Length: 288
Image (cartoon, rainbow, N blue to C red; front, side, top):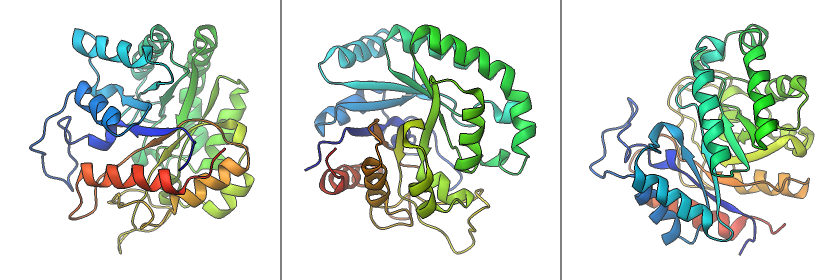
């Protein structure tokens, strides 16, 4: 059994929170944040990441539940901001205000980091330079505030950039409070050479890993991330997630790992895949 810290992100149950993609049907199960936390506790997880799109901190029950989770020794919590498309490649300037507000809330809960996204797969084909010209100034303001608050910002490769390109942009800000949230499912979709990435990437710049296992449909092509890339049981898809994470651990990664399920493959259900993923990582991740 592994002693690596891992947990789960609430997007894994997005249908239970009332959201479904065009490849999905609405769920009959309805969850609030407490139900998700109960799932984590029931499966002996001490790490959760919460999509801010599903989070209402004005609800006293939710607020108190998060305070209770955070107060328990050893528990880890991070907010994951920006679903579905974050700054939309810099075209959504109003999103910076929302990100700044959630950064302040992260500090209020004394969280170590907050995940953000610059865009999504619909932004992938636009030149990175153009997007960063729109994002750059306000991002630097956000990072400055993150440094003041002591909350790190981890930028997910949200199928909007190849990872080496995104890391170059992150390193261009040159601040230790800005790093990468690595999603290898998204990395595969945009056409990264994952084998080479595992050897070349500076693991000190990875603040968090989102563990995802995906399948490639017959009409999908790496480098063209739009389309249905369904989540499947861990160890059965294109990523071989435990092998990849283990290599990063061997090379020095020591941050949090959050299981994230996206649109599920045919015949699969959220609870079943989540439980399989938990058991798979417990059995297959190397100890640090």
